[in-house]
Length: 539
Image 1 (cartoon, rainbow, N blue to C red):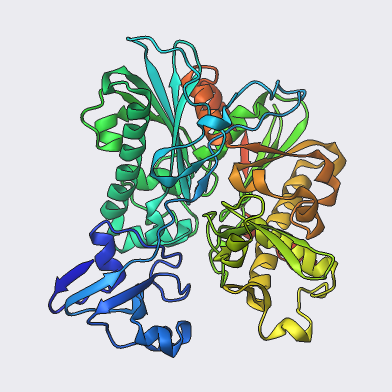
Image 2: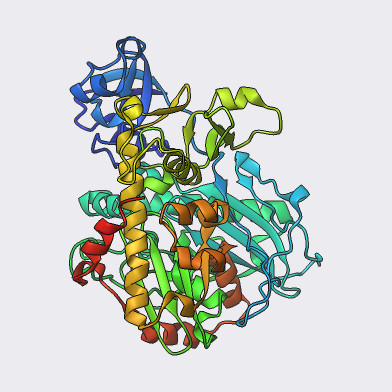
């Protein structure tokens, strides 16, 4: 890419954002993550102190810089890194055994052979082409706006069958990997840029669904959207001024209806769009969709729903009452703040195990059996791999109960592959993330006045929860040991829940009743949260 600007005051990251060029920037340009890497082909800027901390002298000579630290003037040619367009995105609903709340085996019947989508996205076992097509069939679309990823599902409204899926990275990641970074970016004058970014992503997904099913815009009757409260604010262009500071007041948590033109910027779609209601600033419509799908609001017994991610949202409840909270687990499980951390893209380590030789072995996303070359070229590690590694390091006494490396690894970290070293600071990030989630669970159980053995099921939502090794997660203290055998990965409950609303199985009134049933717990105001948090830092 060639950029020509004289007297340029903005940094290169901001320039790329304005041109809709995607580059990962988990820290939103604060210079702390070291991941907005570009390579100047000519006219490289002088290295900053932060550049010298991140890159070797050889890399600096070759033109490598951090985009957020570089302030180009005049004409420059830069090469952008390989993007995360091949990120794994879960668009399926996990089939499970019957529970007392509903038959979980009903939902998505999927065909692995048809699980590919365009653009290099790996769409896992989706239900493409399962609906009988008729010339005048009408359809609806379900959309899951995740902080990291996006997923859309096309549903035949007459047969209620899933037809096509489309998935993508959320390109708002260029404004930061977590919601607080994006709130900050929005409040610093980038609100409309961020809205345009998510609208373009969703427009692309919708057009992909239409193209794959070979239907017209006129056949789309309804669209139902869910996401966390920040994502819903950003797509609507709401101010985030009060969202990121105490007392954390959203502009609107209600059921929102409008046109595709107003909500998505798609004038060609004469379609009603619904955004599901949220519960609080940090427990949004995505969790509402999960509650609805799991029928927690209709269940006599207590059920726990966990979405283990940056925000660590969780709900414990039954048909009488819900206790909801979110805990700032940070972006560690999604690759943020980890020296070699990355999203779930090909070449990234997803699972770790200890071989008989005493050396850690691992699986790499995209590898097939016998592809040792891909192992040798591993480029990073994602959240599920981090949990496995932490468990194995402790199990084999390479770290102590406090998470401290033995002298052999303390300074350099543990090397999994040539480009992947897990440092002492990386372990600390995992400890803080897992302690925050574990302490949050304890607070909810205490608020409900029950014991762990009174929790019928623990549902793990989202792609991360589906890929996680539950035994190892319990082994490092992320999941309570008492719930290990009750923990069920349930996949994308956001798409599954929005489908329930799309088909009229869950009503607006029911969702609004859940809002009134929910008791929002602010963990910062809980006297014993800090004590619990510190106690769960250990392994």
